[in-house]
Amino acid sequence: MIDFIVESVLLGVGLAMDAFSVSLANGLHDPGMNGGHRLKIAGTFAWFQFMMPMIGWVCVHTVVEAFTALQPLIPWAAFALLVWLGGRMLLEGIREDREQCPQGADPVQNRQVSGRELLLQGVATSIDALSVGFAIASYSAGRAFGAAVIIAVVTLVICLAGLSIGRRFGMQFAGRATIAGGLILIGIGIKIALF
Image 1 (cartoon, rainbow, N blue to C red):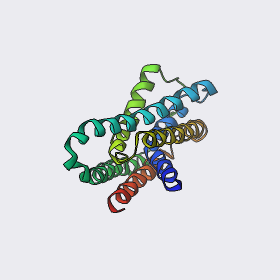
Image 2: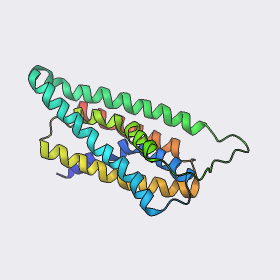
Image 3: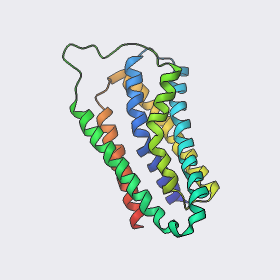
Image 4: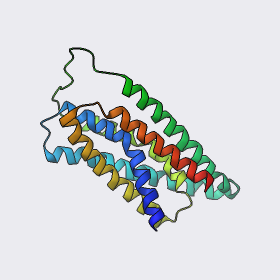
């Protein structure tokens, strides 16, 4: 049970790094953001991070169960997807970490994120969580639901922190957060393949 919780928390941390980076940007653009709006943004990211693994899990169980010969390949598919996504995040994080705000530019625009922008951000930052359905394909429905809930709670907390940090310190941590997320996803992919 402890392994399940730790693995779910680590999945949540790894998957939430894109949302964390976007939360930093949202906090930077709206430093006067009230608590309700911060909760709305973080809640949106958490909802998408909950739904995507469940959608992936359902897809695996409706398609792959018909082809039982493919089931031994699921851990390797999860490994490939998580390493690919983690590597992509790692490269994006390194690139973001090297980019700096142009000299003399004012990064604070003080604008509130619209509902449409928030939905697009939610989808964009959680699409990689769809592949987690492959990673948790061996879980029962209850266990998959529990993992998705833990991932959502972790995302909520991380995004609230990202909004606060963004409001106070700006974007200097965004690239490092994405790098950490990429490394965590790669590590989980390796663990799934080897153990």
